[in-house]
Amino acid sequence: MSDARAGDPEYEILRFDELQGWAGDNHGTALKVFLETCADLRDPDWRSLCALAGNQTNARTFFELFFRPVMISDGDPALFTGYFEPELRGSPVPTDRYRYPLYRVPPELPSGTPWYSRAEIEEHGLLDGRGLEIAWIDDPVDVFFLQIQGSGRVQFEDGSGLRVGYGGKNGHDYRSVGKELVRRGIYQAHQVSAQVIRNWVRRNPIDGKDLLHHNPSYVFFREVSRVPADKGPLGAMNRSITAMRSIAVDPAYVPLGAPVWIEKGGHNPMRRLMIAQDTGSAIKGAQRADIFFGTGDKAGRAAGRVRDPGRMVVLMPIQHAYALAPDELG
Figure 1 (cartoon, rainbow, N blue to C red):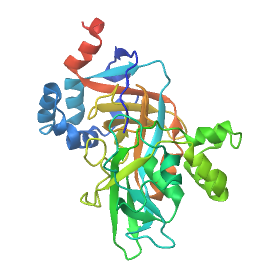
Figure 2 (spheres, one colour):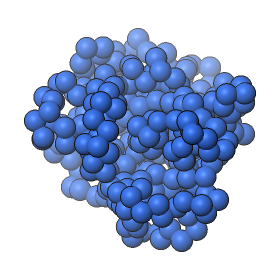
Figure 3 (cartoon, one colour):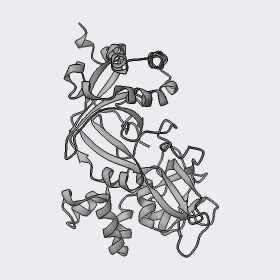
Figure 4 (cartoon, one colour):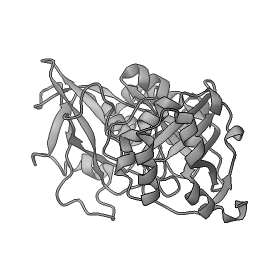
């Protein structure tokens, strides 16, 4: 989950015809995803729009009539990355093969202050034997990346399994192990991906453990197997997120539940209306978004290749937009 922070953002109201590719998107699909979470919004203006949204026959007209595109800037360039829901091999009980646990939140975990670091938790076995284990996994690197993604599916050898979602964290800020590999001179920035990190750690188990401990953040899970198999994992709004339509944002700048127009550059450009339905420890800033690519290895490979520039524009209720940028009235 993202820890909210406030910078000195600037707000600019745009026209819909200034959004590149706006007319060509499937606004109806975006509206369906918006409806997944809009009923949970507490602000009266958002709730009014949610009530209207369920009766729309023309989604594009709905967005254009009741919202205004707001460009929110904090001085940092836009950055788009991707995330996914991993599928892991596991066991409900520990075995010689399945030795690496996924833990529930320990009851003594403090709120708002840092607890033990990743290295301290793992090196000293602080959670061992306390009945906090949800499942055991066969690869510690898979556990590490599951914590980064925040949710996943665990498949047992008998064909059964479970789903886990974000339960809490130890209060330490996320530190990128990819950037650390670059700092150590092992790879150049353009060479680093999740798969590259995974392979390097497996080839270098001692140095690999030290690398993973560079990230002091540690995530705990909860079982969410009640979520239907055909639905996405639960996001920060405790509702299923949708592949290629849900993004994680920094809620210090972007309201959760808001539609967000993204113009992603890079190898596979994207012009699409997304819904801000999730957060992430590494997602900080007004122009920062993590795109949800779906479930499984294929989605993981696609997500791992994304580190692209562009811009994101938040669709705000009209009165909210002009409250943020009053000089643009008239």
